[in-house]
Length: 231
Ligand SMILES: [Zn+2]
Image (tube, rainbow, N blue to C red):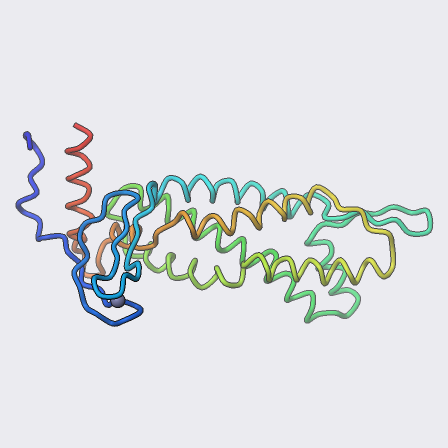
């Protein structure tokens, strides 16, 4: 160890967890990137640390944001009926359903296809950008919770279901051709499956400042280790 960074001042960075399978309490060791900790009694995976826990989900979330904008602005489908052609976006479809008195369906589609995924992308982007410079302010923790509660609603199944409902409603009236927006939705489904896999919320939590203004010791120690390794 040379020079400016000393680890001696930080408390031992160990965490106690209960195994989700057999309830055995045990200390988690500091995991290397890509490492896994298994329960010493039953072998259940207690924790795993993605190889690249913050940069990869950030890249995926930025990609998701771009694809989300395309999905919401490009025509979702083209309609041909009795020699006339028209196209609609997700928003246009919602508005159309609202106009035809299908208020409940319109609200469900708007929530699952626009509000929940948009909120999830927004909160994830904020969290991932804020934790790049630890310690992140405590409101980042709040955002992380919101992203967590948005995630099940922006699940691909729910989103696809919402769009399918809209599609079937319209297909009764006209010939439907998939538009760019539909392919963007397909891309979004893949990205939404990949973001939670690459993201480790614990890694973000470790970088959030505590409510009483203290800096989380583990983040401090880890940053120091990283700074030293880079030297
Ligand atoms: Zn166990």
